[in-house]
Length: 193
Ligand SMILES: CCCCCC/C=C\CCCCCCCC(=O)SCCNC(=O)CCNC(=O)[C@H](O)C(C)(C)COP(=O)(O)OP(=O)(O)OC[C@H]1O[C@@H](n2cnc3c(N)ncnc32)[C@H](O)[C@@H]1OP(=O)(O)O
Image (cartoon, rainbow, N blue to C red; front, side, top):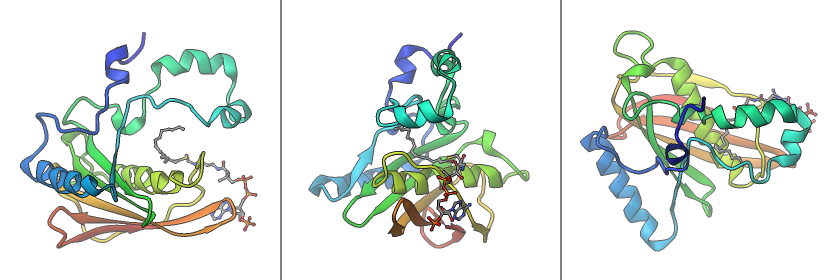
């Protein structure tokens, strides 16, 4: 049985839904404004992304017969929650500045310590944002190394802003830094490379 209907799999989830808080909506509108002159671009997001450009990689790492069966059931991890319960987010990229920003509201199913965002969930969205920043340049990217400093806990269901910046490219290696700030920009919660 597939986990999602065809309709859900092909829906773009990087748009507001009724579970979004006022804070997330406001940030979304601010970034959509920045997209108007073409410097920033909103990145659509699906439960299953097409494997375009990955076929060589898949052939090298995956068993083709298992792959066929898996494909119908697979979902992007960050899009595998019901609306409002997990990661509610939208990414925006600025290719000239080699930056990707992710605005995120972490839902109640991402709890670690009571009332706080789970550290693994924070790492997940950092990995996805920094990975997307590298993927704007590389075709297929894998994380080789992820260093993180958790500076201040993130209250569950609050809104945060991730800022990923490509620092340098060395052959096929990309070095990306990423910070997580509170929605109002006052608190640095996490920094990673
Ligand atoms: C088109 C599809 C769209 C899909 C939907 C889009 C949605 C999101 C967008 C992207 C988001 C992605 C974010 C998620 C990314 C992940 O989490 S991937 C999963 C976790 N990672 C892995 O499973 C990787 C496992 N590791 C490997 O496969 C390999 O180790 C490697 C590929 C990383 C490297 O191996 P290899 O290719 O054999 O290279 P090496 O010769 O070993 O090394 C090359 C250079 O890299 C340096 N290096 C290797 N490992 C590390 C490390 N851990 N730390 C630092 N540096 C490392 C190594 O020293 C070599 O450097 P030099 O060339 O010698 O300078």
